[in-house]
Image 1: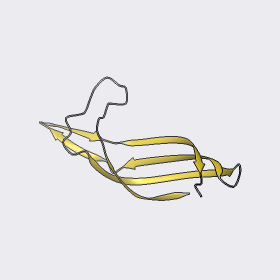
Image 2: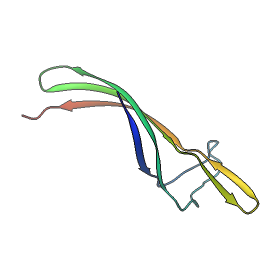
Image 3: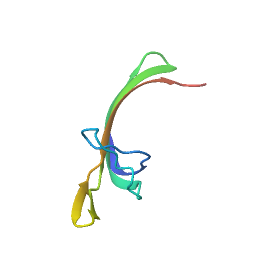
Length: 88
């Protein structure tokens, strides 16, 4: 299990419904909270299989466009399956 402050740099963003880009946001570096949990299953002395789930939630941001205020929230999740090979 892991958790704590997380820093990320975004390259491209889309709205939740996929209809619009929000790539005009100049600030692409974000801070937030990362949380993860995983398990490693040993197969032999040198090979293990692992699975983990990672989640990142960004600190929300309010951006004014003219007379409108937009609220941007960013988060992502990932489920990873990996093979770990110990080199001797």
